[in-house]
Amino acid sequence: DDGWDLFSKIETGAIGKVIVEKCIAFNNGVLSDGRSGGDGNGFKLGGDGIGVNHELVDSIAFNNLSNGVTSNSNPKCIVINVISWNNWGVNITLYGKGSGEREFVLENVISIHGGGSDNIVEEESLYKENTYLWNGERSSNSEGRVVDDSVFLSTTFSGFEMRESGIDMGDFLRLKTEFDFSVSLRKNI
Image 1 (cartoon, one colour):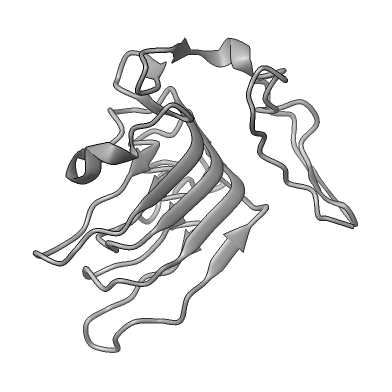
Image 2 (cartoon, rainbow, N blue to C red):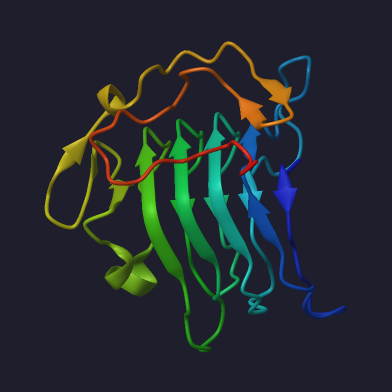
């Protein structure tokens, strides 16, 4: 089903704020025999239009059957230092439900090769210099700068190792030094 699922529902109300930091979500919705199963979102940050300031920080979503990162109608998600790459659905989709105020934060995000265009139409102001969103053909920022897979040291996933210092995926989806931010899966020790 989904990787990180922070679904809130009307019947039970909001869940407490959750900070998901230095995490990966990949291959969700794909069973070991290759069939699809469940929704397949990488990071699902809410539900039923219930506003909770969940944070997704220093994390990576890739190869998920559906969306890499979705607000799932939560109008208050915070997404900072995130890479969303090669998800079968949309890499990044932030939207609310109903007429309540939208309070999204989207900073230092790179989205490349999604199955569809990223969705932030409810708040075009999230489209900034440090946020590169996939439009179905290319990934660009608010100034028109285009990026592609060449911004990564590698796009070949060969697994990961859990270490005391954090998650080690080698050079896979590690940004080259030309960016003024990086996504670190390592703990501050």
